[in-house]
Length: 539
Ligand code: AMP
Image (cartoon, rainbow, N blue to C red):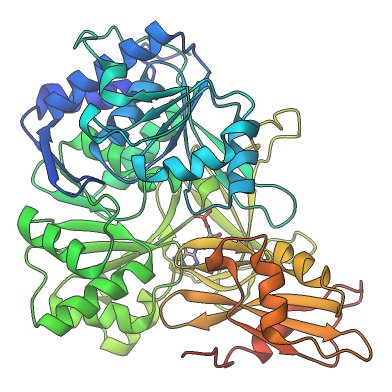
């Protein structure tokens, strides 16, 4: 029997519309790229998102067209999120830290027709502009007085673009499975892959992250996503904030400890979210200055493992609850969240810490399991470990441009984990061949290829070694060609020609040979184990 309820689609436009009509005077505060703080309300944001949606239609952006952004967390980026997706186009956010080659590939692969960029990223775009195959115009997210000098003919000022368009807009109603946004992630092999979110997945994910045991969002909260809006939609916070009427603080380009602290205090931030590296800066700042963390009550930390010391400092010294989260670009991202069960709250500190450093339990909607190499499901006993698989309504079934491939019913995460009897998942290793530095990926394969291009390098392996600030940094191990002794700096100079500076290995070690597995592949797990205490220069 079919139910007799309305079939109202879950659409992103409804989130901002609700935010503006119910919490119209709630504030959105942004640190601009120009410096000053910008402050307005959900009502103002809604009107400007309507103007932008009208402008996009007038320009000729159709449903399904891709519109790229290269921008920090700020109010114009927030407007773009809702205007682009809400009007039926796809908001494609990009990481400005990618190399020019990677950015070119991603923009062309997505087929972006328009690019919205912060003025600071203009040199980046200028350098690749003649290689962009579908981009018609570049809209600089600034007003006329802050437009940079530039020779590009197709440059438009954001405020001119939205111009005098109407402050209301008839948001189209369409199937909730329509694509809403796109974010590329580094593949272990080959080129970056696009994850294409839907309105349905985004709205359901927003409902999930607003829950009390996740971010606990609502009109009485003030949330500051430090995680960038170019990284998995700032973990969904802009959508969830609009939907729940939380005050939203967008920190712009200044992510150092002092700048974050200033916003937390001035705006009475109660909830934050970001990768571990960023919190080191904030904790260092408050320790140095002897300050407290004001009204901050909880922080969602994910993207990389949360060090035990970070949990104790936040919780014991500052009374801020740490909630570790686990997810991926392909999982929207929130899939697991770590809060202690009520029965654990009286446990001794070390027992509680042992749980808190785990990645967490499945949130409603996501199922997780671990499997061995033959695909057999392993027990959830806290000991057996295998590759983590996940499934649910906000988990990718295909990559963008590859819809003909068989749909995945379980997503293989490339993380190796245990799951205990209470459901707490703990990542113990990573099967995928990548290094995560400060929350951003570095491709080991690309570095290895570049190293072996050097005439004196016979074999190369790049592994992640633990780093106190960046969580992981790349270490390059090389086997030299017989009769040669390549110098460390020479190899690094050779690699530096092709990758962003922050990708450069922190150290180069020459070895006699590399350990190989049965299939002739370098045993990275063994190398990671062997070099886990390797002291990188400067540490
Ligand atoms: P990304 O797609 O860039 O968001 O990266 C996702 C990957 O980051 C996961 O597959 C993990 O390898 C890693 N990751 C995310 N959250 C955590 C966490 N809490 N602890 C350890 N690794 C994490």
